[in-house]
Image (cartoon, rainbow, N blue to C red; front, side):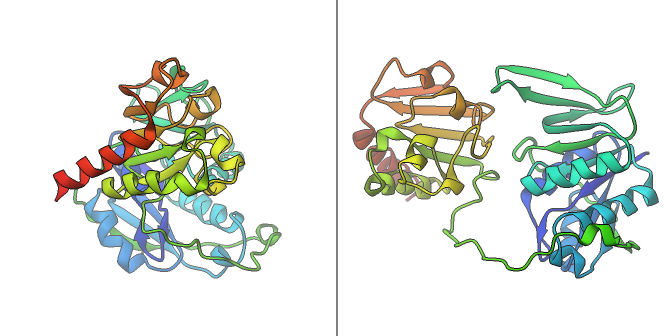
Length: 320
């Protein structure tokens, strides 16, 4: 069976969930070959094998951390040359999409970004995308070269499928051209104990109706009771009520959780563009005519200051 390259997103060997989703999708079109760059392959390899990686191509070099994405593209290109895959799958993070785009240019192939599903086709892999603010669903395939496809988090359920996962060292030569931009410092993101917004299975977001930063603990309490990430609309972020890193929407982050709860969010098209592919959407808004109600699975017309605390208490009581 043909091989499919899967770029591994990890933190010192701790494999992130989107990579496990990629391995699940890769098995639909071939045999997954994971590409692990940086430290921690001994930690990552058993996890990758458990989820279907027939082998793991590993490389570690200081350039992967010392410079921006170009050295990683050198490594992924080396893996591509070694394997001759039928497709290359990369998580749809900001870094992932840049790596994918640079690789596609180098190998003179087409690229598909933000896929939400993947299937085998007679003429190559077929990707499903949600486009135009999720108003349309398209199916497309690359017609030139080897498809390079980035996949949005939460697009597939993670499925275990134990495979050999043998680790092989990948020879990588980092070109001088890839050392043009050096990383001079890093600031660790402050941990909230909550899931990463783009990867969370549940997201609770607050908007203009929250009416102030001092009221966002209502949103956080509901999120914490559900084990969810916290999001915010652009209106809330622009007002300084919540950090920009938590903004959901066209100019923020795109999320696709199993459950999305929008509290006090009217549903402007820019916000909908970032969350409309969520599997189940619940809205809480006192305006029965709010646009958000056009796309929800469940809508609650009511004051969020009354509804959200009651919902939080109910969730806690059922879990308790």
